[in-house]
Amino acid sequence: MNFKPMTAADRERWNDFVGRSPIGDALQSFEWGEVKKPAWQPLRFAVEEGGHIVAAASILKRKLPKVNRCIFYCARGPILDYDDEELLCFLCDRLRAEGRKHRAILLKIDPAIRAERREVVARLQRIGFIPVPDAPGGFGGTQPRCVMPLNIARSEEELLASFHQKWRYNIRLAERKGVTVKSDCTREDVRTFYQILQETAQRDGFRVRDLSYFERMWDELVPHGRARLFLAFYQGEPIAGAFNLLLGDKCWYLYGASSNRHRNVMPNHLVQWTAIRWAKAQGCRIYDFRGVAPQKTADQTQDATRETHLEGLNRFKAGFGAEYVEYIGEFDWPLSRFWYWLWTVGKPLAVRLLKQRKGQAGPQPVEE
Image (tube, rainbow, N blue to C red):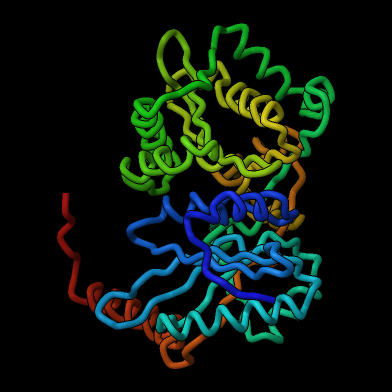
């Protein structure tokens, strides 16, 4: 086996390998590493055997402020056969060496491996990886731990029949009301989508990145056929949209936005149906709705007095017949015990103490 760094000349080979893998993800595509610049530096490594790639890891390197250290993050990777323990150990050993060369304090991974694969978790822990607790009140970790993929390797008639009856009605309602979906968007449409996304974020209480990030996504992904933007219009007004990723035979619903206006014409249902049909036309087998909140227990469901935003999101995606899937989650491999302790224990403790001191000092001025 041969471990080697990969360059732009290897882009096509890289994407072909990641795209063909059952656990391949667009976040491991060559182009996604370019999207994350300049805050993150992409480092791509592969293991070859007989001239063919058998393992790949697109590492995002981020420098830590004021110290000569960094973190390594392999989003939705590495990509390999996790049942091949010899290959897994070989790759991880080489990645550890690269991490120490770059003075990384940890290697973080979150491969798209189902939670029931406990033997994979055991292998990772034998190597030295530590499970990271899920963040409360959200999708889990850095990437969603729980997702909803939909099998679209069926006819459109079969797909529609698998949707919840109300979802089929809403799709037809949007069409009857005159909602149209633009699927040949241009770069100028990114600004329109972003304006709707800001409206969505304000309504549902989450933060969004700067417009420049979405423009960079367009510049790095769309020309290479890795993404598509969809916008829904009603009476000439843009009211909803979706930004989707594509790699191999999978499509991922990455970002969605909806206006507070004209929600009664159900544009989101038609946007998703349009995107699913487009993904089928590209030869996709899976349409992944991505992040959902962990399913509640029966007791938690009974105690709920109202539906939260995340619960509504789960219900919306489930209405399309998508399967609920939970992954093994996020794992850290500490490459420096001292710095890893500072990162995971020392820094959060200092932040909490600072907040407590500010609270004792009285109310702080709020910047407009």
